[in-house]
Each structure stands twice: as C-alpha cells, then as structure tokens.
Image (cartoon, rainbow, N blue to C red; front, side, top):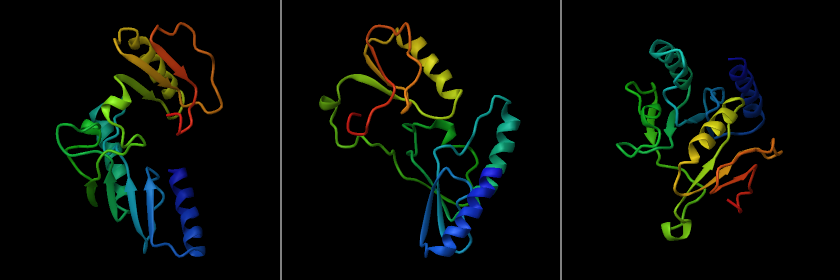
Length: 180
C-alpha cells in the first residue's frame, strides 16, 4: 500500500507537468488518476496465497477496489479453454471496471514452428526468493524432459554458478532480446 501511495503521488506530479491522454499501467496499482483514461494491465485477477480461499478472496476484494480506480482492465490472455492463466486470469468474479482479454503477448511473434524448434524455453523473472525457488523446481523436474530445455535465469547482473545441471539443459543468466 505504501508503494501504491508513492505511485499515485508520482503520477499526480507527472500529470501536472505533462498533458497526459492515457496511462497504461503494467500491474502498477497506483498509476490511476481522476480525469485521465487509465488502463490496468494484468494477467492475475485472482492472486493465490498459501493461506487458502478466504485469504485469496480478501486479497481479491482489496485488489478490485484499487483496480476500480482505473478506466479499464486489460488481461493479456484469451477467453476459453486454451487460456494460459487459468483461474488466475479467469476468476469467478470479475473486476468492477470493463475488462477485456487482449490475447497473448509475446516478443517471439512471427516464428513458425519449423523455425522455433521442438524444445522448451523457460524465461524466469520476478522477486526473490520466489524466482530461485521456481528455478530449483524447474531444474529438479527437467531431468525427465525428453526435449531440449533452455533456461534463462533472468539475472542480468549474473548469478551463482549452478551445479549438477541435468544433460540436455542449457542455462543462461541473461540474454539480450536479439539473442532470445
């Protein structure tokens, strides 16, 4: 909530200096302001906690109260059974603003299957320690994968050298957009 308040204060100051027509906020809950058309972009309309259904519902209510300050909500997923986000992006209860599924977003557009190859690319990012925990889970399960697996750890500054990487797995700390 402190970060949200700081974001709101920053946007008020920025909007006072600039003539804004639109703000698109990528999961930044504080970047909405009265009088400006503001879009909240998120794939996670339902935030799952380790504390169970009641905690999830309380967190969703709080999140929706904040999302309600925006003009629209865009979800980078598709409707229906081939959704990538599952119930995270398709909760039973929707936000209190007009919500639109805008399709999958990818920096890898335009490649055909024959060009891309038959492997798995894992791009990790996010806050610690969750990023490292997920990395360990992936590496622990990847040994049984029959395909080529490339793991990009999301560590632009480099990280601790990994030991015991199963065969067939290529690991990079970070790759440029062009290399990806």
